Image: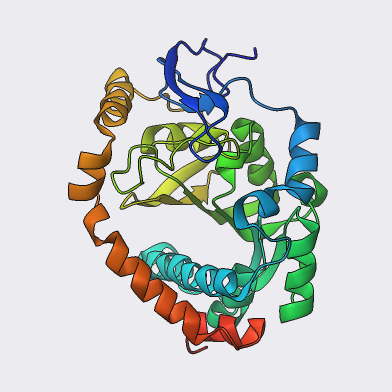
Length: 316
């Protein structure tokens, strides 16, 4: 099954990429012509992933074992945005309040989402993060509960809300993940997931496929992966793909993507390139946006991590 789709077990025949965009080393990425999922071939073993994410991933991609102030600021701004999406979604009629709900943030990094969720929304938030440096940082810098742990370590616990931000694309067995989350989330509980969108236009063409991202989701494949256990309440696919799900009362038949969904993914992959990125994806604005970002990060250079995070998330 090394070269079979991890969602539908179909042989993966369509080659998408052969080079890691970050390292320029060989990387085999293929598309499933049955459901449209894009994934690495072969997928790494569980033991190899566990060793990589506990010790090497953060240093490979952030160049540091513990977050720097600029990482704290960026993560705080992102946390504010993601929690704002959650808050606006429940105000549309799904729930009246998040106050006091038990919340788990999976792949919590330095703990910025956990801190912001407790401060801004009154959630009873905890996090799990496999990287020792980042989880230790969260506990020491913010005094919050971020355990050095993986999803399997908390499978016996129950939560009203689980958030999974830019983590699912690193997990080789998404169906097992959704089944585990179904067992951990209370009836009528919520699941908020954000992943890179393989169909988005605003991703730089030289930064799409790389070793750490095992799976590349479209709207259709993410909904398919979750469909047996969760139903979507709100979808945002402007840039990254963000979906708020509600737990089903009982598992249902998975909702397989249609042939037209697969065709859309194939077309979008063929359209990717510098022309689309610069014109349609807004790449022409990136130098200006980068200058603004650097200026904002310079403003917090002398602050403590806690002061930086409070500055990033705004008034509590």
